[in-house]
Amino acid sequence: MIMNYTLRHAGYESNEDSNQIVKAEGAYLYTKRGQKLLDLCMAAGSQLLGHSNPEIVSAIQSQVSKGTIYLANNQYIHETCELLSQVVPSEYSDYIFSNSGTEATQKAIRISRLASGKSLIASFEGGWHGSNEWTLHDSGSRFDLDKQALNFGIPTSINKDRLIVPYNCDETFEILERHKEKLAAIIIEPIQGSNPQSNISGFLKKLTAFCYQHNILIIADEIISGFRVSLSGASPKLGLKPDIITYGKSFAGGLPVGLTVINEKVSQMSFGNPENAVITGGTYSANPLMAVAATATLKQLIQKNYTSFNTESDTFKNTINSELLNKNLPFKIISNGPFLRLAFTDKPFKSRAERDKLEMPATLQKTFRDIIKKKEISWPTNGIVLPSFEHREPELRLAREAIISSCIETSEFL
Image (tube, rainbow, N blue to C red; front, side, top):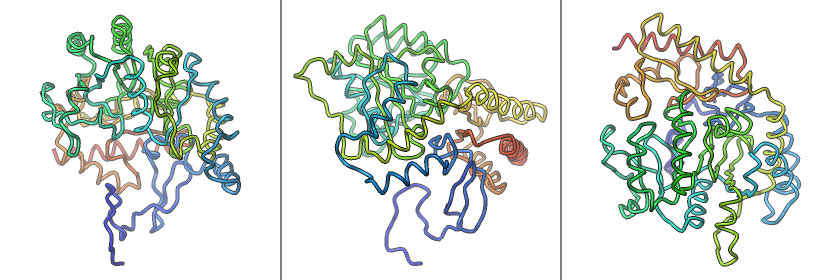
């Protein structure tokens, strides 16, 4: 087929690719040529209940005949909010819907600036908050934290209102101390996608204390960790006490969604003054199709055993790491519950900057991806493994065997 167009979406460019996905069910993807792939990415964690979950599919099919969008108040979004109020920590009672994690973090930053009257936003090296210009950055040099190299298309003028700080180290607080009077908010993933550390609680508690002492708002980006590591997310579990939380991905069953929730303090500081105005809506925000999918998802998540989900993920990690250690292979799985990443080093590290310095070259990491792909595994390019509740022992065993054997084969190129 002759393509008379160019699809500018990484990985989607070719229309001749026989590996194109045509179906997804449970923990598996199915290609155009009939291959069945074990999915270890699950749409970046969006499919927490598995692909094509029957209750979610049924809810969506039923709603389509009633209308996919009204751009008006509707009962379906209020049903979703009722369920959210049962799982989101009770101090966050203002809900603002959007259509992606990027939008949710954009709104969180805007509201924090309105509430504080300040403009400077701090984010962390190795963090990811979508394609939000205030936080999208490249460190320039992986190890020189004083350098900033912007991604193309973002003006340098943005730097005066944003601050990028090192992650999980004492230097973090030295830099924040110098800028504390100007900071509106600090945005952080309680668990970094690029660096999901199991022992991050101490750093998060120290950050909370610093922000409370200096009246700096905390934005917790729980787009991935929310509803995953626990029903209420990572912040309560790890000791982070944010003023604003963003959610997305998993709680709408794979439909586009973003959610920004704020506590009473921020609500009064931003919306308590009738003269303040900030845009909180959008054409597709809070649409009924997303709402019924979210309601069907939340009803099921409330019934799930998160203790077992975390235990199974820890066992998965420990079993792989034990085997890698026994074979003296320079790889290891790092994780915080069902939020895992394969590190291409067996050395300890606390931040992405340290990880990048220790990991084997990108060429060898690609070699690993090429090898595991041949084992009928859909492996995330960024290495973040996000299992679903549909990843039961047969799937976890298959994944363990594929990861270990791929590490063995990759090590032959060292």
